Length: 73
Image 1 (cartoon, rainbow, N blue to C red):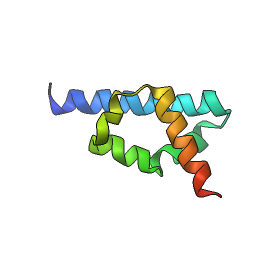
Image 2: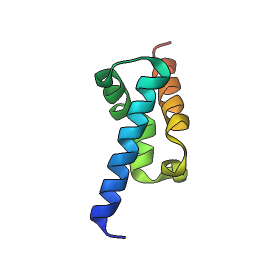
Image 3: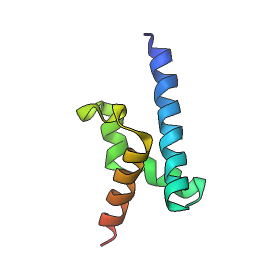
Image 4: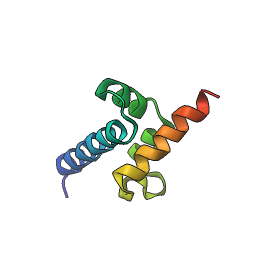
């Protein structure tokens, strides 16, 4: 697999995670995008930590949502 194809697959996964945030929690695309890119989970996905990129988009969206709302407490 080439680096270009890995990039395309990763971008597609990120888009599906962001859309899952919108669908699961009724937030806007802008809010979901900001939430994704400011999360620790997104950093871990990019780094390949614990094979998080292999988890479902809805599972990862839930982790990101929980992370975001724990920080507000």
